[in-house]
Length: 68
Image 1 (cartoon, helix red, strand yellow):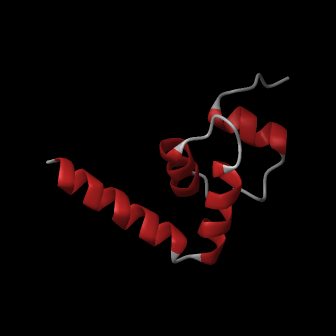
Image 2: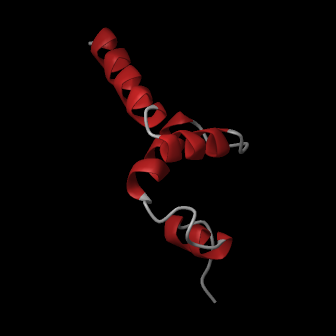
């Protein structure tokens, strides 16, 4: 089971790195303290609007900020 999970992890990382925009997002997200592999993958997969929204909009979207 452990090797299957590791295989999926490798597949996910390969898919991200094979796409220029996703790879750049990966590098940026992983450079932020507190953003680990799981958070970076989740944001790349579930936030296609990244890079379009402002900081406050992204923070509100992921639930780490209060909306005025």
